[in-house]
Length: 133
Image (cartoon, rainbow, N blue to C red):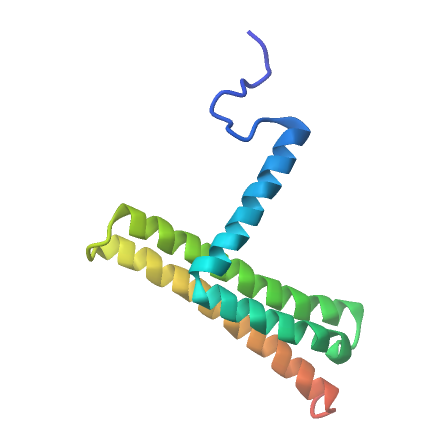
């Protein structure tokens, strides 16, 4: 018996080829989110609008990273929420308490990301205009 894992049940393969196939799958995921999820499109546009302002508002590299991470966290949360909703809709389209709960929790993830983004950016604006230190 060997310690190597069999590539069985690994449709994307192993090694460096897997990295290329995984990247391709990620690109497909972004395309699907853009095509089917209006919230993702809206939030991506928001991110693209705010991104240039992060260079102006940031007072340090660490501050800039907080602003950037708040934008990326929003996209991350929306992608997770969209994946949960797509899977839930595949499993059951009728009202189901657990599926409804999963969708609500996914929505709550996005809400938390939006609060984080709002706090980070409002504080950055207040600091930029010297309203707070």
